[in-house]
Image (tube, rainbow, N blue to C red; front, side, top):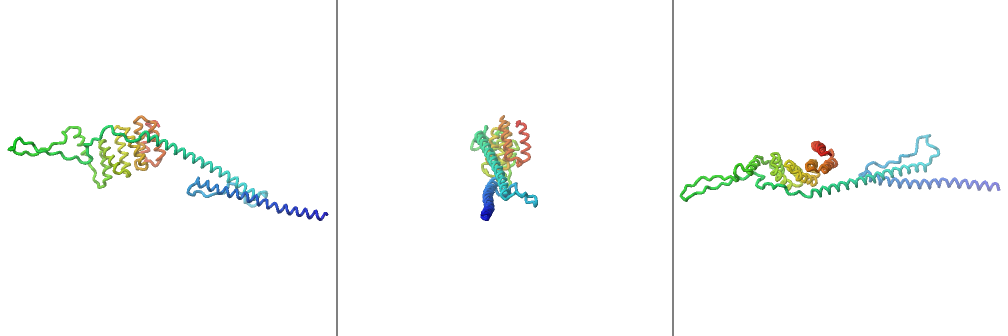
Length: 319
């Protein structure tokens, strides 16, 4: 009887000893699956946070201590994997929260920009007709020579007289004086039609012949709307209106240049001058919006002279 009891107890001990590793193996397999799943989710989140393949996946912050003699005898592979799982879950929650916050901020910025663009489109739907018609009698090219008419004869027998030149306008009249000023402006002839057209408009503006400069600059924008010269011409058109004392037309010209050619060489200038024109119209709140957009869109990429002038204009507008 005693011998049978010993045999039974031995068999039970062997069964318990065999079952323990099996249970540990099951726990290890379950935790390993959790680690694999979390690592996959972590990579998916990293692809969203770092598009284009930035930092590679790194392990959890908690790792088993492999220093000889320092590792506790009570530590097991299951405990190590559990610690890794906890660290991965914490990192996954942090990255997920950051992704959601970044997406929310991006949506808010897009909404604000869309609302601002819509507001500006409503305020400046199209360029109105100028207050004063541009004199059509002032040509861009050199003025024609005066007409020559033969003198009248009293009778058929009277001797013929030399033809006398009759001027198109009497000297001293406003049109004749204006035409004389226009004729003094040299027309460029470098062979580059596009550049010559803009340079002529610039020379007219420099001579303070603003209506003539406006007509010439409009021609440049109409003939070459996609060129860099169009950006220069549209910006100078706004300045011609501004110098002539027409800030309303100037604001429209500047806004159209910024809206139609945001990457043009004179887009930052137009956005800054739009704020100046709005300030002259008494719309200081809108002027400050233009200056803020200049900083948000171009920032340090804007030329130094534009940033300097914008700072002075902001101070004047009280932004």
